Image 1 (cartoon, rainbow, N blue to C red):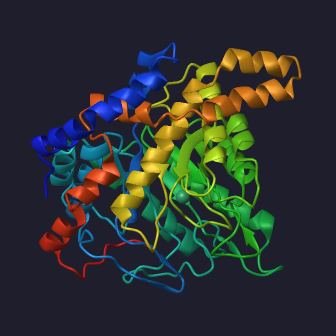
Image 2: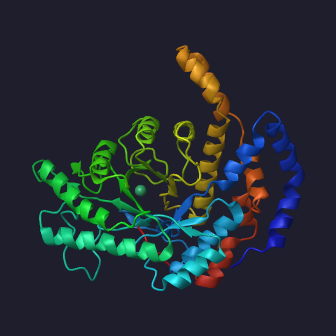
Image 3: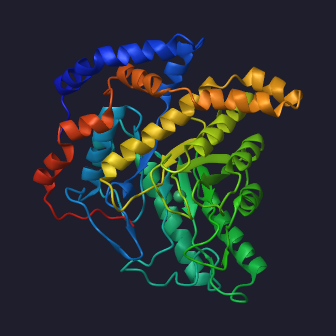
Length: 424
Ligand SMILES: [Mn+2]
């Protein structure tokens, strides 16, 4: 289905006076308003190809309806999101769940929707039906050289797919680890993983980056071979300047100070970017901002301050991606909410009076520091985010539009009630 310009205009016109009133109220207190609006317009968050179907848990999956049946329909879904919010202009492909059989056609289709290809993701955490050797006991760290070779070759194949589409980064997430004490020699596992990553790194084109994602636990429960940001950074440092640490918000032990991790990785020039999601207990993969929006704001505060300190471009110099799925929501509504939460946290961070905060820090004035941060956090920036979206040709309220125009109902008509997208 396509969203027509006249539908967007009709929807926005009905909300114009309400929006204008709240926008002016917020805008009059912001000195660098146009700069902030431009930054919000420029900021794009990649949608992963596996998030367009209903997510599942190990207890089961309750598929929704009208889910995309192939990569073309996944791109069409992201096109819908982007038409509404103008902030979802990128897709992150997972291989082999989404193999671009005809790269030129896929690239052309994405271009029609103004979508570019973000990082490509390899998968050595599952066995595929046609696979010779099993990843049951790991992939890049496996004790058997033949298994490692198979996993390395898969990653190199993913790079080739990415090159055809115009991607410029490979994300490696390993589930390699152990479930029981004594199962694994930690140093051996690290060294084997490093050697495997070195071979993948050697196959990276010049302009490419290698993103090394870490995760504290799961599916292995005793140790993970890339278990935290220190281990990821160690690999990235040993590999070289094209290797970076990727932060997935759900991949930490409870109460980890993620904003501090972000600040230090940025300082070292080793932060790849983000997988955004939210969680209460573990790697819950919930909608971004649904549980702890204050933490998200604090992370963005470090990002903005740290990127500005290094003269980085907010929109392009790091990889921004959602890595969430939820089993009780319509995936497209869930993604609209996630992108909105990211834009809100980013807008709030742009409002922080950095000079005043630095002064408060120099004076050891914890009260003033809190006032400055929370003043920005408690500012209702939704009208700013909406204004940026309207300036880019999007809609005032994406979720309301989605429901009013019965987008899911139309997708069900086109695709059927019982369709299941590939993914977790
Ligand atoms: Mn992730």
